[in-house]
Amino acid sequence: MSKEKVRMVKPSAEYKETYVAFYEDWVASGESMVPWVISKEPYPFEEMLAFLERSEQGIDIPEGWVRDSTYWLVTESERVVGAVNIRHELNENLFHSGGHIGYGIRPSERQNGYGAEILKLSLEITKDLGITKVLVVCDAHNEASRRVILRNGGIQDQNYVEPDGNIVERFWIGK
Image (cartoon, rainbow, N blue to C red; front, side, top):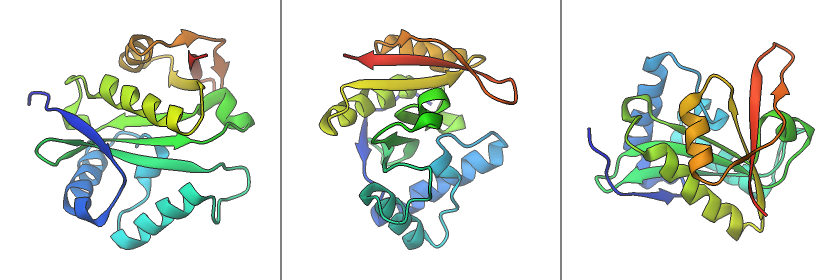
């Protein structure tokens, strides 16, 4: 499938059918769901939307978590092809291995340039939130994400080794 023009949208009932298809495509792939927020089952859909809205407003956030905003990457043909979760601040865990921006592209839509687009558009949102220096991370084995981050101006910082031995590469974008 060829790349279409895309835009970021706030999650809404308008995109229910295409988001559920996005979710089910990812589940069927058997891959880990990234960002974490897409692993939340979209049934009932209205409850998932309310959860996302509360998270953005900072309501009922679990201890050790921070406010976050979720957006979906939608094509001209109204297909959800990606999702991003933007953390409004960093706690210790996010500083080491989560970053400000967590994004993922639908498995069936990879290699179409959507990763670079979602990160570029996410960086515009972080500016609007007043975040001028953005931390973006990826697992050391994820060459595609590393290229996307570098293409968007990422400057590599020290890696972080998680307790299970996974190596997280950390990059800063901005001033």
